[in-house]
Length: 487
Image 1 (cartoon, rainbow, N blue to C red):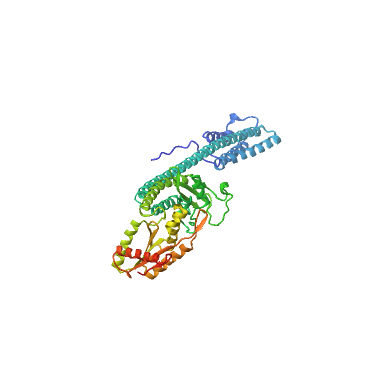
Image 2 (image 1 turned 120 degrees about the vertical axis):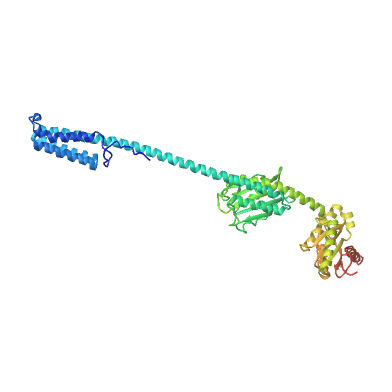
């Protein structure tokens, strides 16, 4: 049970408690004044013991006593001052010493009240100082607790981010292709940053030394439209270092760049993906409002770049090795070995489902003469240009290969002979019209093409290849620069 501490003061007025000595002294004075008229030994020359005067003293001090108890020392001090003024006036008029003594008593009472008020005010001031200090300590403690909560929250977020990065790193290890890995990097960066309007990953095209969009994610699809990167992404690629911009409209490094569109971002956080001293790509986060990103976001993006660059480097190396194993280094078309495997699969599939396909075999007319006249480098230019024209005439599911030397072959799934003849004629006419430029000399060349279609012609896959070769030979024997599909 809580013990109740005894109060040191008797009663409470408006300004505070009464001092412990006050009531006994006042009570004694009142008692003395009450018995004064009846004590003969105290009768003097002045009328202090007169019953009327004693009664006046008695009543006035009772008034002062109750005024202090009920209304506080301030009211008592005011009344004692008024009583003193009245006594002084009566004394000056009557010249009666009794009123001078009364004035003395009132003055003592007044000074006691003022002294008590001063002590109470001092205590109140001290209490106010202590209260303000305690309030300040409470506010400081609350601010410190709030700061620690913020630090704790930030620490928990960092721990969560590190755990997510660990899981992200493990997930990247099982990804098998560049596109999937790039999309995974972008998605994770977009989600962990949490405040970007768009997050984009570009890879560097080594031959052209420019950025190429690989993957992107945004809250608005219209934002992801810079296929070659913004001026900020290109700056990161050239400088090979991170970039943090609070407001692109006020950044002096890009002040000369015009704001061409309303969709240009105001906040940018971008970082290069490095492999040694070489820039592999750029990861860029952007927002349409200024002041969105901070140095912590750039540091986090740098971690993503490091993790992603290792994975993408390995995947790109693997893809390049696969491409070297299946594609011709000069023309970029498939190799003969890969084409034959693909053709055998298509032949079996068409035979099982009673489908159709066509073959186009072609050869460059007088290619040896071109090499002898202009050199082998000119011959390489001719082969590259012809391969480019062939690709421009095909659908995504068609397959073109360098069959050997200056010979090319094309597989057209789900096409009949008429459609194949049209494709072959398109290739022939484009090559015939195309000027080949080498050593500031413009030259032209032609090709001869042979076409065979399944099921118009039947037989094994080897037999169909032989028929296409025979059709090509017939085109050459008829004068070259033509398409032949009749055997």
